[in-house]
Length: 229
Image (cartoon, rainbow, N blue to C red; front, side, top):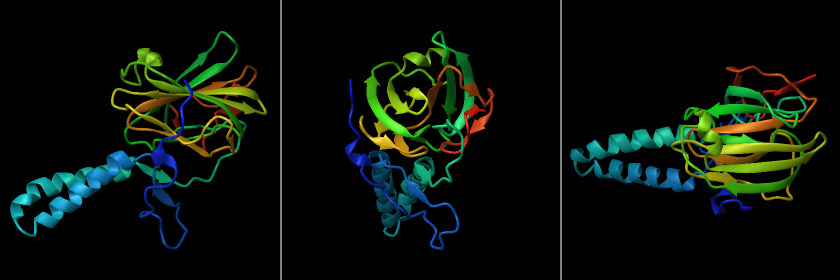
């Protein structure tokens, strides 16, 4: 069934990490992080303030601040200098598998650990033709049975024809947040969605397009080329 972007995905939550001199890559908080990040930050701020009244509140303030720092790291969304190539990686992570499909396509599966940036990007320029949510389980994303997990299936109309990309939820991830609707035109490397916590992203290369990465290779969303000439 088609789904719309989350109401929390209309604008960046914050810009506190952006450097003033503009020389280093700009980093923001990922859209769609509000339900997780804001309550954690509020709890950290409240318990820290209460430590002024009683040092006993430090027992709660220290883990709350640590969790806030972890959330800040997890939901980071750095600016990227977009790479070159016909198809670029939609996700940060490690190439988990490369599989030939019966219809001639090749599936490149990228596993995203909780330490990776979890904002996904468009692998090619084109028009989003469909964004479909498919209900499923929540086994670990590195498990072979994760193909049946909760997922969002994307199709893009591109110069290479129809390109399919699948965001797959993992054992912890329970929410995939699309940033754009069907009918949206995207440029290569544009942000298109977020998967919260560990997960996987599959890209199906069309028949005739040779794979340019290897199993075990690290990828960077919007930068690493998946195909080769």
